[in-house]
Image 1 (cartoon, rainbow, N blue to C red):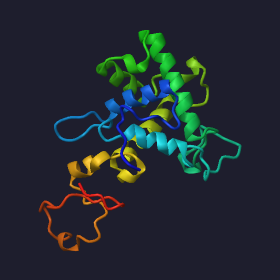
Image 2 (image 1 turned 135 degrees about the vertical axis):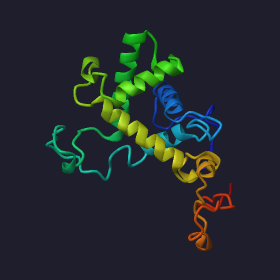
Image 3 (image 1 turned 180 degrees about the vertical axis):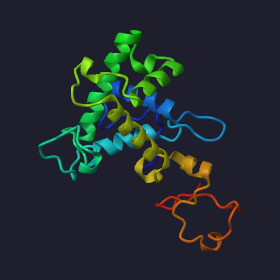
Image 4 (image 1 turned 120 degrees about the horizontal axis):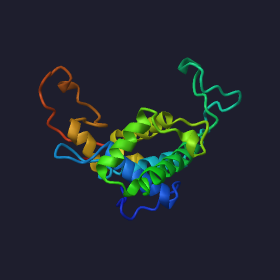
Length: 204
């Protein structure tokens, strides 16, 4: 897909208030600095929106039959009755209710430091989603999905909507989908001189 301008992008999956949350959260998970682009510059929210609007978001190829046991060992596989779409819908609603109760503002209207604090509490499971009408999904589980999908969007091939202009690849020196760079494999501590190439042949 052609990389859209994130300011004018129309989400395929997220409702408007959910989209504002995603923009605000991704901006704090990977903020822009003088080293490389942030999640917003890399179009990470666009990647997540497309990912959730597809088969991944609907858990089309996941085993989703009962019984579910959220307390089971991770070795037993995924144990929630929710698809990724439902995890985001329910998680965003719970975080929004928490922010409104705690700060009298939606999450996306909080300053950067406060948003960081909320995200840290989600990661550490210190927000009780059950108190906001979500008895099954845990805050840390929602955060794990959000962080994982943000990382995926930041480092994915641009054809999937994220990593706009291959900015993340340029930052880490990743050559991308170049057909061959065999002559560089054994040259340790030597900087690779060529920019990355996407799967579709775009060059950065």
